[in-house]
Amino acid sequence: MEINLNLNFLSFLFNPIYYYYIKWFLIAIFLYLFLWIIFRLIRQNWLSYMRRKFLAKQEYIILSVNIPRDNDQGPESIERLFASFSGIKTDMDWIDKYFYGKSQLSISVEIASIEGKIQFYIRMPVQFKDVVESAIYTSYPLVEIFEVDDYVNSAPDKFPDEKYDIWGSDIVLYNSNPYPIKTYPAFEHQMSKELKDPMGNMLEILSKLQSGEQAWFQIIITPAINKDIRKQGKNVIKKIKGEKIKLKESFFEKMIYFPVAFISKIIEQIFTVEKPKEEDKKIVLTPGERRVLDAVEAKLSKTCFNIRIRLIYLATKEVFNENKGVIGVLSALKSINTLDMNGLMPDKKLNTRAVRIIPNQAKISYKKTAIIKAYKKRAASWSFETGTQKIFKKIAKLLTIKISSNQKKDILNIEELATIYHFPCSKISSPLIKKTGSKKGEPPFNLPTA
Image (cartoon, rainbow, N blue to C red):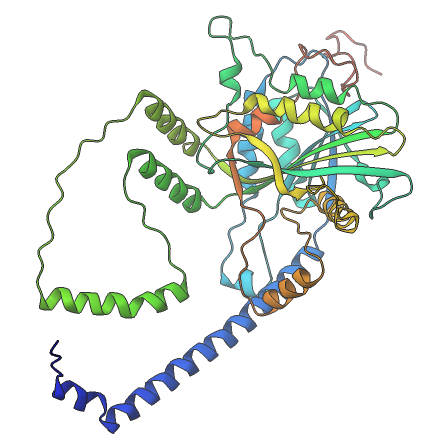
């Protein structure tokens, strides 16, 4: 086998002058990367410091909502309430972000069953009180709203606890965000328009809790960035249609692939290879694919929010019963699940259930403590790293290195939110739901004046 060497190329390769230029080129790249990392370190840590300072100044209140006994308004009324929550979105410029640490605040809508007595709550920053109250009264004129103490304060902050045991989990979507869950219009009878309330079963389960038992259900709502959900939606629509999806590359991936792409372009210019033109293909969707595509487009047409759903079952050790306090609520939530689109399920990583035959009790106790703190703080995320994982995560955070999170950001629109959280109508007969007294009427026109 004969090998022909290109002597001109070899002389170019071993020319000392080119080594000089290559050396300084590599030094320049190293300095650029070093300064970029230093800038990123300063920027991220400054932002974190200012954000913590901003959040520490925020004051929160909890409103207790009592519904009229003869309430006949369904989920469409609470959907209008959620639509008004879009008004809490904060527009921030770089001065707000870097010098005041402003970040987007959230509202939490909650249901608590304390020994079977069910109460609806809304927790919010104090500056949103007028907006929320006005929205509630607009949809429910006869509702009663009270500012109350936080019901979670009676629960322990750390586990194991001598008196209480706990089960907790974040509830997440099991499919991509653009795929919708089954919403309340699907539960209406086509002829009579009677609503088979998907929340009815859950409230019934919550009303059966006994002395020493509590169940808390929480949805943390944060205005979503519209371009993010639209981008996700476009990718899902392309996937359904069988079109190619362009994946986003990280900075380091671009650095690695740039030389390859550059050389490929040169080869294409030297050897002008004409690419065959792809003929326009007519996309034919099955009825099922068309139905899913329409549902995705319908979801994206309404206001969307980033959400975090969390469920807690807390009870004294004498009466603690997971099957009663947890399985029933999770089974009730399954009524909104669909196999071809989306639904809710407990997060496999972020719950307190033991996954081993011989469970690590220390780790389980740490997770129980972490989730009760997350619920009390209404945190959009929480973690349970222990030992070396915790140390590495702190180092990565200090160096502003992004590590894949345990959680993805779930997104629901206002119709989906109204399906899983709405005030009960008079047809739900649970006697332990806190309601207002008799209906208030206007005073007689001939009432004598003082």
